[in-house]
Image 1 (cartoon, rainbow, N blue to C red):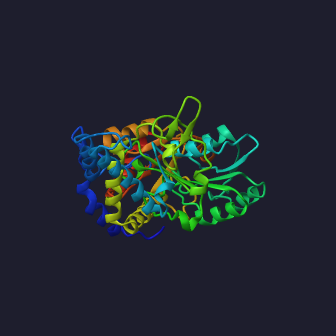
Image 2 (cartoon, helix red, strand yellow; image 1 turned 90 degrees about the vertical axis):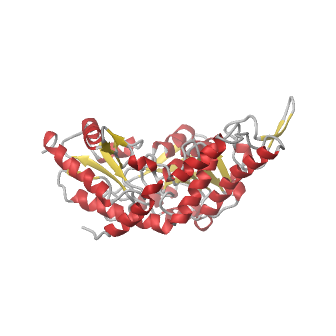
Length: 409
């Protein structure tokens, strides 16, 4: 058991509760408890207001002319890019605005022009979005986990001796909430001559990442997992590396000149942003970043750590539950559980939702090879963000205890 400070959890949750209208939703006269934040978070009113400002105003395109309102909209769009750059400590032209993390990783996997002769190291707990693009374009080696649920760093260093072209690191697992030693792994990968690609979709909502300090080549994440809108994803690419990528899509907005035989690409990052982007989403994500900075990432990280400890303590008190991953390591507020002697959890998830109003996730969590190696069936996942209280977690476990006799006791 580990000590947890529930006052830290509830202080932040109570502070921000009024900013998230979704917390007040009722289904069948029952208040919903939202615990599926690893999939996507609820949205603050400030974000929605910013998107409405675009849609209810002159909702022009960006970078397509010289009218006053178009320049206003374009400036607002670009301001989001520079807020992202400030967040992760890079230059604005190193930030590509895409649709999600999946699109960002696919752009890198496609743009590097890999072949099946190229090796890519991927962690065994990777989300499908940080596995399938590499499987499609290259030859994948997976870093194993030890029997006690920890990443096998000896195996990682052994695989680095095979001179992989790319090392794709999932900073935080969407299954276990375990934070892998990113700084150590990135340093070792660079020393081995590899290109370092980081999936930060689960980590950056809770912890700041300094791409300059880490000396990584590419980093991807999504706005919707950090209280931002869907449809906005970020690819950071170090300038010299970003310029080496072939664009995955071609069309309007990413060229400076076209004739009947040739075209000339725009400078980075715009050459990777073909077509009309999610302009309203950029308005919304810019407002979200302002909101998160006002709260402070120190507070977000504290809440994440304390909530993780509370979840683990309550899970370990119940002998019918299997905690996926090693509990004695750096973890965030993402917890996946196997239920002993119950492989199919569809009915349990449905009862949690329809009877108790608790929204969580079950299944293989878009990490099927990893989950299948950890347990004989599906898992159920509970994940928290800044607005979740300790009572939300207690309600989840109390509901499992009540449902239990029907399934596994």
